[in-house]
Amino acid sequence: MKLAYQAIISEGTVEQQCRYLNKALLTSVWPHLSVPAQAARQWQERFPELRGNLRAKLAAC
Image (tube, rainbow, N blue to C red; front, side, top):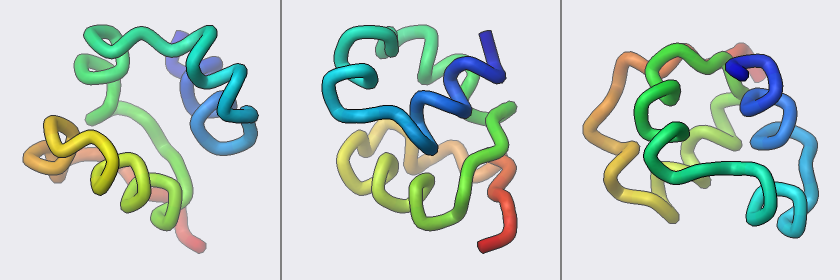
């Protein structure tokens, strides 16, 4: 599941993200994802509940 979420967040279209991501699951796996820093910032801006979780691993840009 982790790899799928990383791919959908990093490379998926908005349609794919809406279709395949689950808010509760995303919140629980967020700290364990490795996504590009820019993508993580954008997601944390859009979904403030992810912001407080600074343990998320960010891939180097």
